[in-house]
Length: 401
Ligand SMILES: [Zn+2]
Image (cartoon, rainbow, N blue to C red; front, side):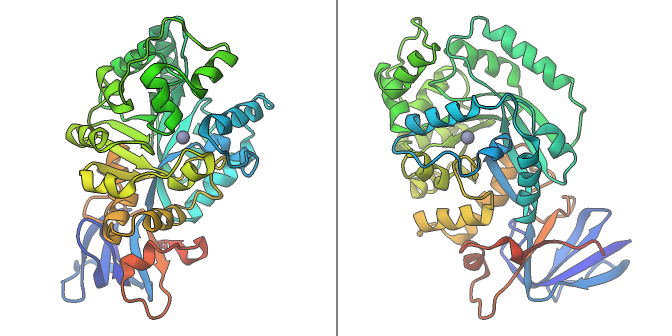
């Protein structure tokens, strides 16, 4: 028996907002939607009117590191990204394992702010059980670092085996991913690409000016940090090109790539990613915090590349509220329509993470993991309102009837 939900606005994302819209749900899946003039299915058991609110798909946070939640407020904003990263690494060395309670709190907070699905990067899998016990779905990116790793293929095989041992769950999909060009050797990149198949590959790319310099001539702050950490490899030859071309040479640029940050991407980087069907994930609040810079968000959109949005971790942002991230994206890219920004925070993220069949839009057959956002009086444009900064107390999950 189906239930029908009515609201002042329905935002299917797959089509324009519907005033006085409704969505019919049966056994957790959307079966139909429409406006006041559309005939609803006949066998509706109950009608729930959510009133002066918008119904939309749960949001998609395409880049976070939930295991770093214990670092909230503990790594001050940096003047440059390598300096910030050095502080993060020294703080991380003070614990032997990621404390579990902040992860549980963060998962609850993410859900309370209206997020359905995350792309969660982990070096330890400490987040797997908390996510398994939650209502959040996720692409679990088991991230590898290794600039002088002696046997990259063996390392990747052992981590793949570790992932195969996890309890298989339909809503958590683990894959092996590389960290970044300055922390992963070419052989390790190739070894990861060789096992990735059709799984999404997330990589931090084009994040800092220091990364560009490192790839150009092998010098700068990342080179110095690798030396200080004892992770430098004399075998490394600087490719002398930009980050996207570098990854393309290594075989990673394709439809499954999520290039995270792109703070320093050029138009030609973006054109190459767009042509390959890759996704750029922007996290502008984190970029400011780490000292990485300001991402060229309007160029992301004008290039035609798929754009998704993430918050990054609580080590570099005040909260994991995707509506707050959307407001910052809107502030930095005022010429990009609210409609496109909302698509980035829903459908584009779900597609990039490999969950497009179930999440990201309100369409028949998809999961009804939907939120309502209470409207304030006098709203002229519901999409503008939703990208203007929504506090979690205005957000609810569509109630079970
Ligand atoms: Zn990150």
